[in-house]
Image (cartoon, rainbow, N blue to C red; front, top):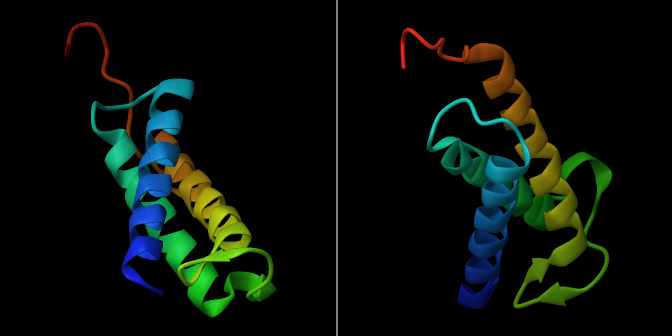
Length: 96
């Protein structure tokens, strides 16, 4: 993957993290960072190694296979969000 492929991957991961932060009920302030890291790792693995049989199909920009990276990023981001949802408890009014 070339440099611009990494830039596209990082930008996409940040967008997925921010959308998850504002679309879902947030547990803590920087939850989007964990989601973005998960989306980035999932997108990279899916694009480069064919996560779960996704292979290297579809459009590729600068070595980044867009559709496998998008699917892998969304799947891993959903897993990260589920782990955060069940592992981190919501603070009560007395604790805030």
